[in-house]
Length: 144
Image (cartoon, rainbow, N blue to C red):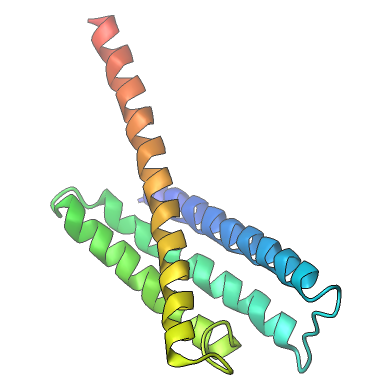
């Protein structure tokens, strides 16, 4: 139980950090794109930062499902990414990242790009942890 909570906190903090880093990088791109006239009024920046924390939690907390060995991997991925992407979509609409002045087509393209980024990050983590497991298995085999 203690190990589960530790893993949960670790993955949530990592997810929040990644959400904040992506937010900052996108903010830099928009600031450069708008030539220094990128304005956020009516507490929009604060709302976006809170949104980043919620998105980090939305992707970090469901990682606990990967500790359930009785569930097949595809089901775990669907649960994790389903919850994370649902939280992301709700927050993105709430803070104005999706919607607003964008047409329906533009909104769908924006949503598709953002969901693709989520799956790319998931895929990179999956590859990392598989490589770690392979190293551990190789060391165990070498000890025999």
